[in-house]
Image 1: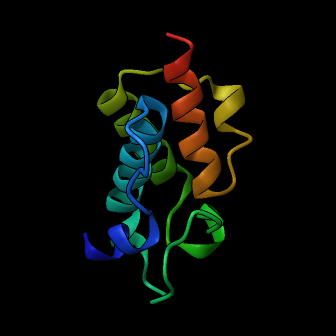
Image 2 (image 1 turned 60 degrees about the horizontal axis):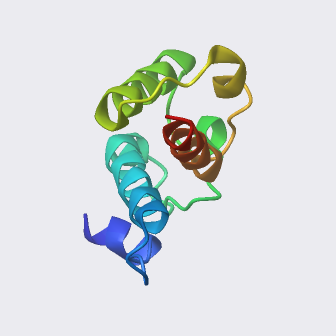
Length: 99
């Protein structure tokens, strides 16, 4: 968890959007940490399919876990375009904003 706190700065304001972005990013890092076999730091710019030891099924499991955790639905056409951790976080945040 310490690595997550180092990579994602806590929100500097009390805005709900900043807090949600922080929570989403923290959750993604936690879910993907076991798949970091290369020893490189996981950053928001990490390409999920190349920077981690995950397959497409694992990625879908992570997306479903995020959907459950943040009460959102990420459409398949949106999920198919997600490449980086930052894009995954943005997809969750934007779907949450549509509620």
